[in-house]
Amino acid sequence: MQKNRLEAFSDGVFAIIITIMVLEIKAPAGGEMSDLMKLWPVFLSYIMSFVFLAIYWNNHHHMIHATNRVSGGVLWANTHLLFWLSLVPVMTAWMGEHHFTPLTVGVYGAVLLLSVVAYKVLQENIIKQEGRDSAFARTLGKDVKGKLSLISYAIAIVLSPFSSATSLAIYLVVAAMWFVPDRRMERILPGAE
Image (cartoon, rainbow, N blue to C red; front, side, top):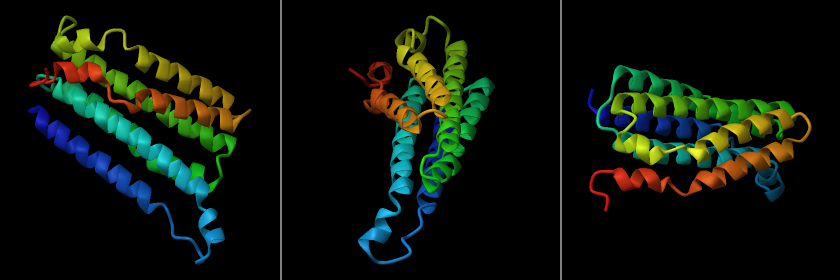
């Protein structure tokens, strides 16, 4: 399969996920500022999830461009990633509507953790296909940020029953760590200097 078909399909799923997420935000019941302020948890959870999805889309884009071909294993690993990301709108709405209760924050973190696991499975399938000595594998290196993300999410999930705020802060630190696109992949993209 050509990798541009995988990328087009994935881009479409990312767009649908974001669209579903924004449609979950309901207009305030009244026309006063106090009515608008009641939506702050919903809007905050939306912003956080939008940033996470934008980070995934950006890094997914670079990873697929750095790949020479797409195997069946890569297709299934990509579908696995999209499955976990497709749960983000539900968790976002649940967490925002219930004002960041410990359970909602913990389950949201579990979806983030499983998304990272799925992303790493996709990376491993690409490395298996491209070879351990490929430019992709060498560029990825030890993937310290990926491993740190996994550990951070696991810690945040464990802490969520005790402090939702701490868990949310950890999620935001992980997002900040990934906010700048992964320059390692940009270096091996066709046409990169």
